Image (cartoon, rainbow, N blue to C red):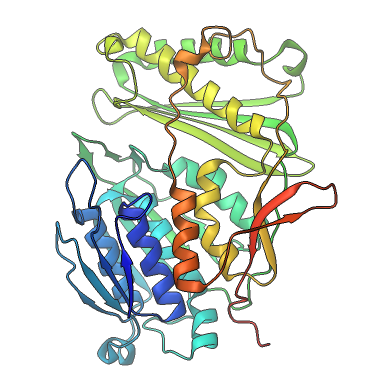
Length: 419
């Protein structure tokens, strides 16, 4: 039994989810204490966390102790529930969640995708059929505070998974989607349907060094009905103003403005696709949210300007880093790096580059643009790597690429590799 302090570093629900994913994949028993000890919204597991723990427990035929709301201690022993192993789960799961569908999916995917490789390496029996496609229907928030949206998952997450060798036969979304919201004051369940199948071959190491030349910008907005047309006009003007004149002819821009099914709720996602090399990056925000200035409340025009400009600025900052993935994907790819064969990296130093496709004179980036900077530093990536070191013994290290730049990554365990 490996004991882990749940208040370490980020100290939130993501830490618990990562621990249980690795526990299940590597067949290691864990005890977590002091869960969310210092969180301002209350210590211990929230109902949404309990649902994730329960699902991972079912998938991995685990014995779970302490999985109740507000608990600060949890014991998880995978692959010991023989009744569940003898009578595997059906090929589908339809579940209702109290939080973000995407966060739940990110939590259970590592085990579901890597389970067959793990069972080969560690000789345990699976509680589901690893040879069949699994259908996962999630009724939960699709547009949530501090969580990737359904649209981010389709426009950024899936294409990056394709680039590291996790293909459509292993992970895909259907068109059977319903809009849903999860905020501090609102819960409107939506629906997403996912088809997945465990990998049958080890995941090869991957190095995503840098982004290529910006080719396409895709804007997805959700806006209340009474302000839909005006928001779209403001959005078109702001997007056009943010793109440099010389880039307007060659840069593809797609704008989708969708009516929000929740009163007073706004969402905006801007994604970028590059070529040579191909990469996918995104930045999104929801409103209302505490990081927005309180004086814009009730003023629809000011809400629109602040939301749009903050997302333009956020994407520009991601592109300026020069990396092949945005900061959210750096965290979500960590566990796959640790399980792959060979060296993997998605963090390369010295990649910073200008973004000539953006106009530095626009409101979001000009002299007064700093007021639209909503970035709040987090340590999710550092937390993920700390957990990986504790459970898998894989260390985050630095190597030099062929141009002498520092690549930060790891030599993975080679899960499922015959040698």
